[in-house]
Image (cartoon, rainbow, N blue to C red):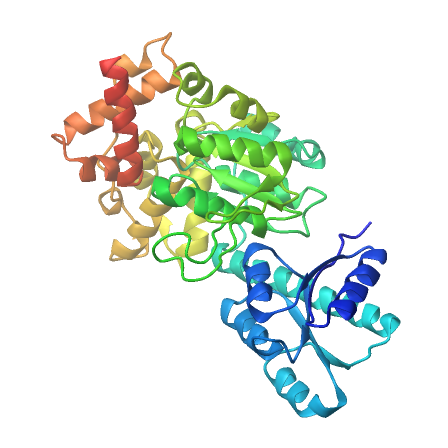
Amino acid sequence: MPDAIRVLVMEDDPALLEVLCEELGSRGHVAVGAPRVRSGIDQLTASDFDVALLDLNLPDGSGIDVLRHIAAEGLPTECIVLTGNAEIQSAIEAMKLGAYDYLSKPARLDELEILVSKAAEKARLRRENSGLKLRLERQERGQSIVTDDSTLKGLLASLGRVASSDLPVLIEGETGTGKELVARGVHQQSPRAQQPFVAVNCGAFPESLVESELFGHEKGAFTGAIARRAGVFELADRGVLFLDEVGEMSLAVQVKLLRAIETGEFTRVGGTRPARADIRIVSATNKDLRAQVQAGAFREDLYYRLSGLTLRLPPLRERKGDVALLAAHFLSRFGKGSSLSPAALERLKSYSWPGNVRELQMVVRRAIVLCASNTIGPDDLPIDGPRNWPVAVLRAGLTLEQMERQYIETVLAEHKGNRGNAAKALGIDPKTLYNKLGAVRSHTKG
């Protein structure tokens, strides 16, 4: 059954206002009345409407004032002007300002119903087009995971079965292993493939802005909020929302995320009325969320909500046979005739790749640019030479988190505490290293 159309009816005649609202309600729509410009704008601020019926003559202004407000705020609300015979010129002016259509009073209810349905369909298409435009701006050109590794090939082969359900998926793996590519694979093979795929990096925003990024905000909710803005929950409606670096969320935001997942409802920052979204959650983390739960840094109930199905991506050091394959892939994609010498290939194979596939891609791309010939030699590779995992890291019995902690401390010591150089050697963003160092320090104190 299609969602009810939300209609704002602006009419100063109390009897006509009541009739219009009752008739629209009897046809399965949600109709809200407003007899003045001010009350109509207040309703538009508090709620979302698909269609607004605007009387041109209101006690404190004109329906055209409301039309201008809708245009200025960028609201996806279509307007139908209700006009008397003497106001046809004003109705034409309203059409020029973006009104969907106009009706002369008294309007026939069947004609009004048809027009409201058509206007609501246009409003829906505008919302979809707006979401599509944002997704196209964010989305890189389509890519797929390149591998000959049996473990990873088995995981990829199971994606179809995973994707066909609507269970939430948690993808675990180190930075640069291709977690977003797998998330896109889940989306592309799911029944939601024709609907939005919206990705957000939960660790890329200050804590004060994460909630706004997720749920959107109302105009004036905080300094710089100059207009209402949709969050990723709203943009991903009926599709897939990919929460990358979900382990970076604060406990306060985790509470609100949990409620949104459980109820399908959320409230924009600065708003009062809940909105709804039908989404499938796919999340990713480079942390051990089970250990985070035990440490009290991640909510246990949220963890179980996210981990309906868990996929673990192996790091590149565990699939060394893929190094040559991936290097050849990146050369064909970016190289324009470049090739690797046998010595260069051996150097790539002997490197530990702490930044995983992402680091390998950047190393190959930089080598293509820096190499004076078409054959890339070992000295053209912008890496620090073969880096083997420290003996302490290779000890049996250590957890992945403990291994990572020791490796970070070792690399940081090699670079004499310079975080920028250490982050570059690790193939991760300096902010990610900063967050990991915070975890290291807190663990050490504990």
